[in-house]
Image (cartoon, one colour):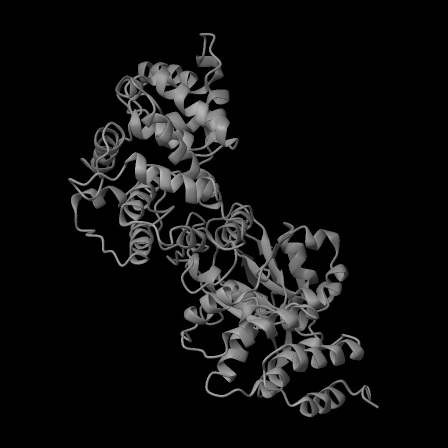
Length: 601
């Protein structure tokens, strides 16, 4: 029996009840999952969804929800309800540490709001979204279009079957149907395994990961005597052997004893989100990397892909550098990442004169003229200055490429690569100052001269691609510790996109949308800038049309390093090809003074 073993009595019953209702009411009939008595899973609704979603995929750079909103424009309420229920099934499997109940509900309500519909989330069916039964993996969110396409195409295939009831109760027939659609989609989607478990939980494991199924069968290959190549058949045989071997234990491949042979304890499949910072005694604070990514307050293209890249890098022990043009929101994203992981953080802006004095620390005189060791920004992140107890404040370094990396980071780099370092300084007690990695230590004695860098401590840095040449001043060994994650500008800038940004910025009545769009597009021909700078321009011109001052304040400083004739071309086109009211003489004077090159003589 592969069904999820409960933590508490009936704690997952609502999920399997919902799956049964989906099977009996929606698949075998045409009824609704949420709106009892209505016919929702009909040929008509499914035909419309195929036309707008499968046959006309939106290949723009917008996120899934934005694309779906456009695809659903002018569709009937029935189609909206079908989409909501399809997304409901998509969200049924993930545990709350993967997608929270609040997020699941908000996403369904958002779709309903596009049609001015409301959803009664107090209905019993919504209890099934609270807990979840497994982690589908980060690509479940990254490949959302493919996951939902697979789910829809499978349902569509089911509806063509004369003997569907038999298929939905026969493991072999169900597996054949699922594999047929898998080949049609051409991608290894997690819904393949999710649907198998939801429909026949007594026969198929609650494992969404292709990789996990492979690892389990390899680890337990000694228990597979029968000649079968089907991975689910192998898991069934392994389960039988384990149930015989451990008659007093419930077998779940994500719990002991079954998990012990194949899974690292650090990868706890059902670890719920907890407060990741532990400050009991002198324990070295750790971070729970098993969190749900969120989008609140963030405006980025392909947000799911971006956040999955961030989460993968951090979980794999990497520090990260967010790269991109000015104004793309890199600094805000860095702060949001720390918020997502519930870690304290310190933000600093790098400077060209940084040395180890600023980063690690050095001697400073007190009021009596005596020298004492004053810790720098790195060491302040890992130990409390007052209590000497270990801390784990992540460090956000804005514009890291301003600093001479090797000069400023030298000693820290040695610790990040696993070495203990004795600094040429002494504490007040006369002990040499030491930095060392946490390694296998779980706790440390509090003292004034030892700084332990937690295994889970991270640097999140930002880098403007305009100044990326200094990247090559980093040593290869240093670069190896970082993942470079691009944060770009939208691929296609149009008035519709700009209006979406304005709505998010609380400026839905902004009067110069077309002008602002034209200016942004023109600027990007000379220097790429992100929406944050466009927001500054919009705020400056919200109640007047003083685009001249806005360009001087927010745009022209970004052109530093461009040939002056290029800047002159920009100003000319700004006047000739946009509707903005521009005082060209003011722009010319500013360029002449700011860049100090006599450009217009």
